[in-house]
Length: 196
Image (cartoon, rainbow, N blue to C red):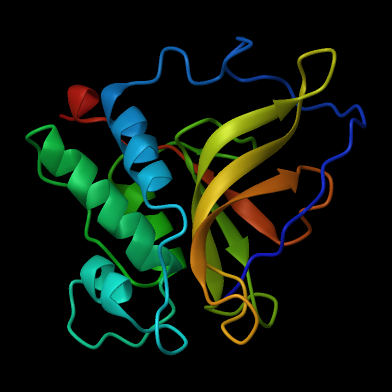
């Protein structure tokens, strides 16, 4: 499904900066950094001829002539390639389903939170409330207020937009923590340096 761009406000919230730093990318472990670098390099890529189709969708889904919602394929591709670049196998199965991928990462040792952390995955409910339909992205930056409290985040997400108007692309989208009514949570990516 699709994520809509959300404007952020400088409204104060009770959320705290989980990293305690002005630059939330400082001190990232290698895997989340690699994942964010790769995801950032793919911004603007996406559908070509038809909805949920094209060479990029085939590449990230690892299937020829793929025709599927692809937000989870995008995140699976980014994580798989990032683990591989560090000489490790991904410790969980890739998935074209956002909820399945989120749960796979969680079972492999990812820490689930209700607050964003740079480099973590973010999951939303889509479609009918409580259904299998979800959307997933990766948190690239935190949005802080003057008191350095988290009021939102920026995530890199695949399959955003509507094909008729903009074609689904990989985009960076801002989110306000107080306006995310269908947010399900965040999960950190297990770093190979701390794998058992």
